[in-house]
Amino acid sequence: MGNYLDGYAKVVCGHCGIHRTLEGHDGCIETLPNVMNACCGHGETKAAYIQFWNSERLAGVEALKYIKENKSGG
Image (cartoon, rainbow, N blue to C red; front, side, top):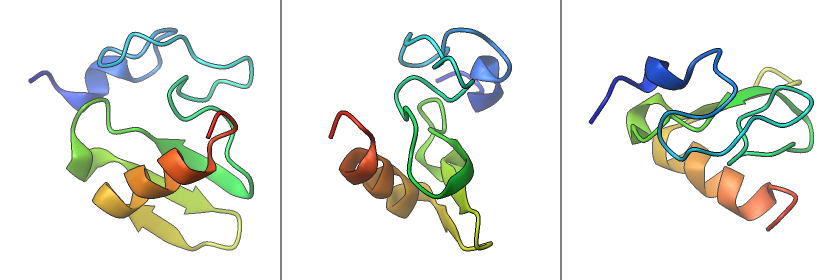
């Protein structure tokens, strides 16, 4: 397994190979409602996170579950 930062600041995620969105979000995350920033973890569950505009934060498994349930593609 590579370092999750292998995907940082790249056009294509080093883990899933999906291109970033036009807004700069990880392609596998897409654009999530009410989210300030997020990371898919690039294959490392512990590194995944979501930070909401209201300062709440999800990490790890909880973040990945939220991403799966709330991304625009469902």
